Length: 163
Picture (cartoon, rainbow, N blue to C red):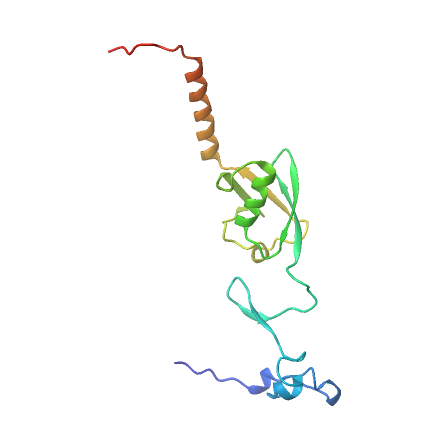
């Protein structure tokens, strides 16, 4: 086990007597907060990247952003949570475009993003543009299947099998 040396001053806040209820740096959280769980207690949250940070105030819930998704010839405005993943965005886009999530490729800032990448972690903000491409390998498979089906329909039926 490694012990880290630190100065206790780094974790203390300077408080005046008028702000004593908001300050918890002196180590007496129950007295400062009015009996534990009070308004002066600091709340913590774990971000998707694993970082422990102080919970933000002033937000009633998850921030919702509007992402403009361009398919080359058309675009769609999709509202989604800022901490959502690209996989969740693909699911929302499958409803709008009709493409399955596995058939979609999403590019942001010139790079293809993985389904597990979080929007806020790669820098997607409100009204940013994301490019949607159909997966070329699956597109080719669809075209081949359609051509094969067309050939089967055009070929005459043979009531017997030639040996």
